[in-house]
Length: 343
Ligand code: KG4
Ligand code: ZN
Image (cartoon, rainbow, N blue to C red; front, side, top):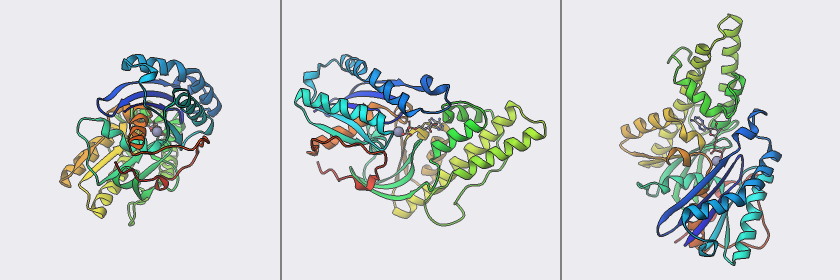
């Protein structure tokens, strides 16, 4: 089965072709970073319009790259949420229209399920059951994954998502957009231990997170240093390092708790913050100590992409999932509402 995947939930237009027999045939991506840069963050209406501009040319491009024609497609998968309503509508309407014109089924994919399954696009595939740490710009959660669509929430962020905290902290330090990767790069030049930031909610049992306090902690530290005449790049780098170390430690502590709680030996990390090298390294060390294994997607499949949507959609189509005629996208969508897929 050959499936076209469409991702348009936020600021990236991603297209991919996945073949259930041959694997990923092609993927292409257009990032809107330059478009939103001057506003310091994603402007939803500009995002929708840009998806309109790029979706069809990118569809042509990905089909050519895959070496197939439209008529060889067996299904279309599109992100139906969670995300920006306008941006989602562009991908959903285009995907459904294409499927209808070609006389093939379309399937609505949950963006976070796409992220969660992205490591399956790699050569070494994690086996069920496992614990997943999903860390993106909109979500931070730990889930026990028993199979496709069988997700039990173990804990989640009570305020900012990890990526959101990275982005907001970067903005406060004047580092620009997109904040996460810029902050991470600067943190590499920071001195370890220059500041000690708290590890939020680690002093009590449970698997929930709270990252908004770290943002305030960073701002207060930056203001204090500025007042003392230390407003320079090294101070910025030291704050970035302290912030990143605190987020990474917290994620490692809670992930360890999660695998111990459910008795899992496999941890999967996915979502934009999964591209953070310090986080990957620390989780790897932790899992080795626990006698288990860490799985993650290649860097470009940690952040938003069409490949993960094509893959998740292909599994759902193979499982016989079909869609009613009404197009339905959702800004919010708990993963626990997904149906299990039994292939
Ligand atoms: O999964 P994603 O592309 O989009 C959402 O579904 O939200 O994640 C984007 C988030 C942003 O907050 C971005 O700053 C963060 O992932 N991010 C990073 C890194 N690369 C992307 N955060 C920390 N370190 C990175 N290297
Ligand atoms: Zn995402």
